[in-house]
Length: 628
Figure 1 (tube, one colour):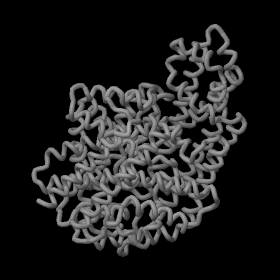
Figure 2 (cartoon, one colour; figure 1 turned 30 degrees about the vertical axis):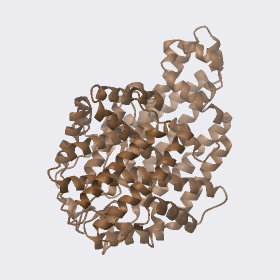
Figure 3 (cartoon, helix red, strand yellow; figure 1 turned 120 degrees about the horizontal axis):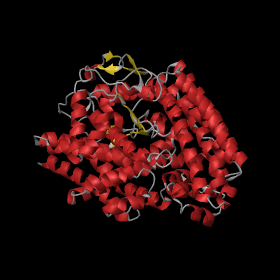
């Protein structure tokens, strides 16, 4: 089950002024004041009381029994059901039963992954997570036949059966399923792919997670985990940023062989699967999963790459001038503005800021987000071994989402909270569609999260009391947008290079580093000096490992939200209601259907220019402030 997370660059944007080197349970001392108040930790008892709870073991046994019983009841019989007089009700009942099992399995899998995310360094949790995955893989093998057999049914007969409400309710799921039909394999091969997924791809992903969590980075005599080390590259002191950048590069370099092996192995695994299934392009499987046409993605990428000079190149040249330099070092790229005092932000202030921004847009949206705080659906503290970054996990419709943060009191953390709560609100609203149709394609899954950030940013910007305060906020937002639009597009380009070149043979660490430096140089521009060590920074991006080609969804979502917000500014009446209806649709509608009520069409090249022009205008305003 997918964890909707922040773009890899974004948890690490701005640090409080004066952040020092002392650590309090893995948190930099400068942020300790901001998080000295009690931070919430999630309560997973809504899923299961404990790892050894009888309820969990009972559900694991139940899942195995239900899967086998489902196979016994329906395998090889769907064509017969379709030919019967009551085909609609009979097939509808089968899909409903399949959905109930999917919800049960999803609940168990969610609990295992969330327990593991809480401390990936704990051997007991790692074993628990691995055992859960193995047992669920074994059980769900008995369900594989169902979707394969459904897709072999006659189109006209199935269409007629969907006239009955029992099956017609699942039309969006059935139609999405039929899109996978050209890439399905023989049942036995599908079973092989399914059964080997846990000891192959999943295990390599787990190795990446556990290795990254165990790494320590030497920064001015301290041994830091990755999250605090990355955060120091936003410290107000240049010497701290330099030490952090060098410390990260040193440890990444020492582990290059392992990360290169993981990358090569997973890229080859994907290539084998793609080849067997007949996907024409390295990213075709992702486009299919996202229910977005390759032409739409290509148009977006082309528009963004063409905009690099007027966006990222232009902004970083402006930022270099603010620092009195011709070029910024790579560790200065996300540095706070010089001679600007920032302050730590306490948890309660962050909560109030986000909820008030949500409430001003839609009281219902704020009400849903407020439940996350009231019912302990958020895990906020930094802890040793805890998964870095942030994510929102939808779990299953019979339960509710959970949000993971690593809150350290930075202004950026407030925006991360707004982002993840946007996901959470979306997941709550979409849950009414049921386990099969609640999940949203990535391209639309990032809409609510980025929109939540935009609401929070606009509310804070409107309250800026001085031109200097406005300048700080605009600069931070521009950097966020560049990291979301430009950087994630560059990441997508890098992945395309890696997967394409891997088809010719295994890639050395140097070769991967060269591809990384090429796309980074193109996207960041001449005002950023990509010095020695930066060639290793591809190693820590988890999206490359867990979800190949996930990253372009962030750029899609950001441009989409910019266009949506432009519509909202021009005509706000009724917008919130239409927006919440869009989120409530979950995965039941194509992006073209969801955007039509707002007069937007992602297939129109002008759509992408609308989103990019907003960033352009913000940079122009910052340039005007520089001249003033």
